[in-house]
Image 1 (cartoon, rainbow, N blue to C red):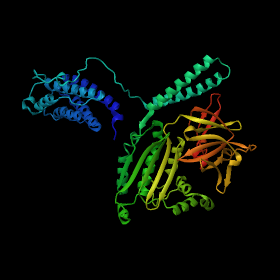
Image 2: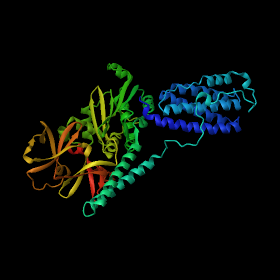
Image 3: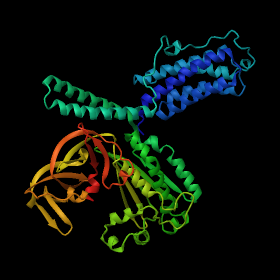
Image 4: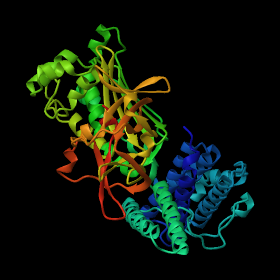
Length: 536
């Protein structure tokens, strides 16, 4: 794994440990027999050693271990703290600081610590040190200067500050309101105000955009931050179910908006739980089927343009479509409706509340609660859920999510006087075409674009808005969903804007194909539409 992205955090946390070490050593001089101080010092050096090892700084990790040995001897009463020992620990912390300086400057970690390590070894092996009186005249101990370490001579502040995530949420809300106010000013300035005022409004808009980018960057964290506990969760689930499962996570360094990750916590656990409880067979059954006794769940994260694709794939028994249809009929779905559904639509029946294919109800699943929650959480942040499966070979759950939420670029389109928004990330092209160029076939309408047929839907029909007089020229928005191009007919194209998207509140969350709402500068609310739902 590439650790370079964590370097700044490593430097900051190590500096915090060194600051604490300095304070604790000053206290140890006053209370040499205080076990709490000794334990705190041991914890700080141990943490530095562990972080250095995980980052690949082996020289630093090895040296920290040497200093840690002295503190371990103090903890176990093999040594008694005296000035010699405290001076040695201080020199050790200064040497670590010198290592940190080299790391920050991207220089080789070639400090000569031989003499200090030798003296540490001597302290640990000399029996007379055990009976030495505290603060007796010390023998010569190598100083930090001798090792090339820089003894701090001035006050300094850390370059990285830990901030409560709620502060960034508040920032995002404030920036969103600034976008709304900026849009209002822009609209007013375009009417009758002097050019100087229009230039000032334009500059204000650029400043707000820069602020937005900065806040979003601060909110972006690696996917790994969410999945740290997932292997433990899988282990516990396997212990309860008696199954053996290997979890493989790929793409953990992909970064997402923290707000997106917060919505993924429950969905991921539900998906993994379903895979273990209902997908992965028991070791005995897998052996009978010619599979490895240990099942496999692969969680993959990749970025595609402005979207994040998360795939959870298991190699279990898969979903029995016939059984799924039977359960759907019991849940109220008509047989005629089932016959008209595509395979992709049939698998999505799993998300019907209360529908479960489980034979038994366990402590963790089987009551038909789960995939409907997954679907709701994913769609609430402008994402999309897709399920595919092959009997005997396993199931794949795909989540398509935006990299960030709240403020996105949208294209405004109109139906009469009503405005709607489409995510620019999904819009491939807008064009005016002759109505006769939109052809009809049994499956519906299509438009030929670059030699390929692109399915076409009328936004009026999708939203249930009565049709107006049909013009010879049609405004067509081409959207790209999973590398497939489709067309959406609208009355007209409006402008492209940065929109602050607010989540829908109940009962509007039940509206099909609506991702959120934004408010224009003149106060008009505009719904953000989900292109994938429109063309499905």
